[in-house]
Image (cartoon, rainbow, N blue to C red):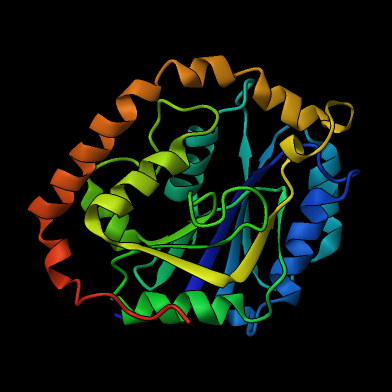
Length: 250
């Protein structure tokens, strides 16, 4: 199996005026080696007319699928699971991803690098890029995986218990326990996270998400067990038998 496309997936909400979402979309296009290497799946709230209007006017040059959500409260796991299940780019040769509308690329050729490591590892890996913020190599706040890998987990793409945060922590633990984490340390997908700014600069989208942190924190105790169940399923599937040892990410 050759991996030849990356589905750049992200939810977005009311971040046109502050420039974050347009910056991400434009960087996905500008920093790709080959526009045919990428497609986009973008989830937008049905009442976010500003974002829908911008996307319509932008005329995105790569294949893209805009999906509407009617959820009243934000829920990142549901957002990504909806995109994963509903995207029209379902293909074993296409990687899926977790990105945020507060991120943007700073490395030319990110698409070539991600596809190269995916092909070198037969799609058995959790690939992530340097966030140039606070996590570095400590957490896969962005990630790219094959659908083959997701299916082998026997679970939804994202743990459905977490409306905010921690879905990346689950994937990180799975990768650590299976030795399938690959950090592309010189490929920068900068995370312009609001927590790096003063409280006065926090935007409405961040505050909307932040209101649901207490609910997410209630489930922190299940992360280890949930990840361990995924690891057991991966071992049972036999997919880890195809891992041929570590490969160079440079």
